Length: 483
Image (cartoon, rainbow, N blue to C red; front, side):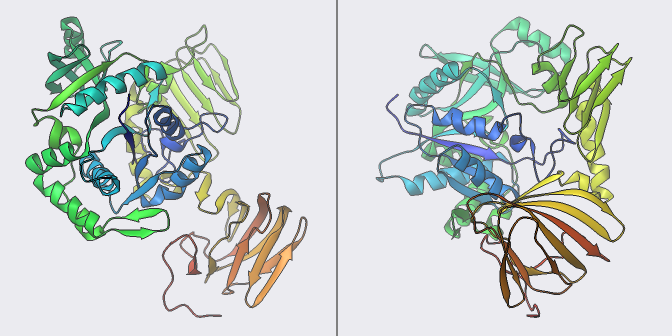
């Protein structure tokens, strides 16, 4: 494979279908699957292993930008990060990546090949994937827009399907039609007929071909994205397209906007264990089952338990005399549902969101550009957190109108700015930050800084943070008293 490939990793998602482990601020592609492995990092490494692969272009939203950059660092790869001003589905997101690739090309004659990958899929066979990409490159060089179709292992009703048409060479086909998620009977009929694949959401095509077909079939999207890209601004390692222009784009998927309309659609079948892990049922189906048909993760004990998915993250989960259930435990929430109903967990998330419950958005451990924090305990007028600051990182210079804070250093060295004073504190030392005092916490050392923060006051919400200076480009405060 001599052609250079530009992986485009789509990193959207609201985290509702795998609640309570996945949250809006920490969706499934960033959930630790064990030993630091995540679906996002799996995707980055899968793409990086391909011959001719360049650094990825990642399209994500504002909220997850530091999770993405940290994950790319852990994968030892660079990348271009494009921040969507608002979610507009896959067709506009891919358009931004195509425009970025065209902007970065070495000569005007070069037409970058884009390998579009969702960031949250499980794909087991790297060799089969690499061979499919190699074949798809040849099809893309002929002007095709190639989708990868997963060979079905059963009559799944949770995936869309693609029907194969006329052969293209010895390894691909024209697309005859796309089929929406079918009923069980229709899915079985398609499998019996043959020539159908699951729609994986993975694509390969040249940037100029995609933009041309997008302009032809969805001109509103193409024009809005072109205006947004022209109005882009660089913010450190992040690229911010023009917000007003991008949000004016219609919201549509690449399937509806382009693939179902273009005559260039092609499919390269791919036979590999694959799943989009879109529900707890998917985790059950892909997990290792015991002799009673159960899939267990974490500290789980069962008696007379059959065909269940049991997941513990913080505490012992004990189950007795149940079957066909999904039980998922996190520090702040427990989900119990029939396996056949786990797709409806989003209804629970909607109720939590309407009620203003933090469990709909925040995980118990919250990532920040400087590190992370975890709420240990809270009650009326107090809250205790564990804060971890990465080496060399610092929090914003900030103040609070409603709460005071007491910091105790557990590990490392803390540089504390308090008003006009800057002092160092080491293990077992502490300091007090009164209400209304400008302050900042920095880790000047080479090891993680761990502190215990005790908050007290009338209001302890995260929105009681007035930032005066921030090295991470977060919104600065206006008209703030200098204390």
